[in-house]
Length: 314
Image (cartoon, rainbow, N blue to C red):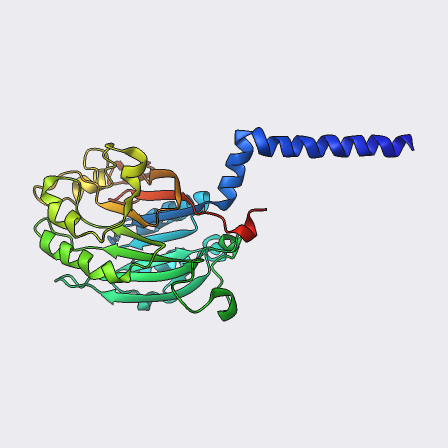
């Protein structure tokens, strides 16, 4: 009897301690938020072929260390795609979209750990043959993020983009040249009908925060949250940083300045932004006697907290 009483006391103590930690310990709240967060990465990985294997390995290692739920790539070549796909660790965690490198359009590809509902490309207006890549992924129920990109059944995923459990992601690489502001504005107006909330438009937009980009900014589909600005205010967030990144300096246009070329725009007011960081800033590689990062662009990683549905808050 005494033995049973001791066990009962220990159980109550353990239960009380656990509940107390959930109620009052900030680290417990952080743990719960981490399990329910949605991490989104965008990265222009550079189509150039110099030390491509080493650069791809560095990008892959960063992705596997941080495990974003979805990665939007720009300047994705078939060769780079094959390097990611052939790695067992990457392939066991991520589904590459499209499923074959020869199906890539506009050098846009996505890697996802979320169940894929739909995927298509849309040709953008312009001279450079650019596309928008549109995917719809399932973000609920809780635990879908751990499905390693396996496509859900028709019953599980529903049939409509209006399903609140689905997220639309639009991966973009807009027209490149400094003088192409009017074309970029047309491309942004083109994607407006593609946005069905909740939605994220992200990628290499090829314009910065200066006065010269007023035309592009005025063409952004309304209702967006610029996640870098929301998190960091006036901090510049230079993803094309010629002062810090030797590759950006090497491949700059004549007269080009350092700018924030890469964006993650969220079209949903109810989600919380937990964090927003630059990635790929470390000069971990050597090229022609110079320390370099894996790309001429830095990536952007957003951590979001979608509201939990009532069925998954217990």
